[in-house]
Image 1 (cartoon, helix red, strand yellow):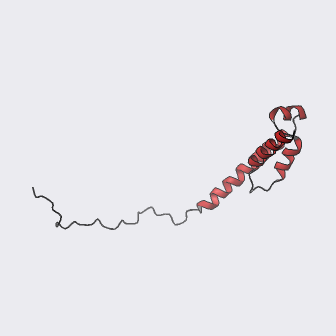
Image 2: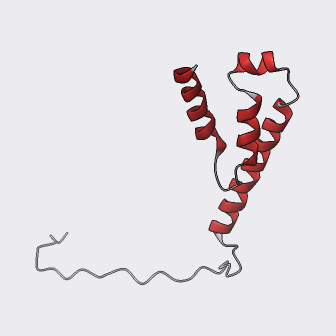
Image 3: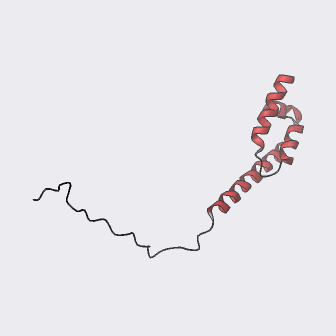
Length: 96
């Protein structure tokens, strides 16, 4: 056996080769992510629309008002209505 010292030359590994299954036609991931966000926002809006069928007393028990739900539905799809609903609920608790 030979001991490796500090002055022993070290062979560097070869440059990685491109695999045979290289896929240049991969879709843009940001586009897929934004499409997924828009789809989830659309689904959430549909759930809010279905909540409008409830009676005002039921909505009050859940913690929403009909006006808040309508305002949340009318927000643009790029804006998440959940923080706004929480803010409106907190404001309603303070003001009564």
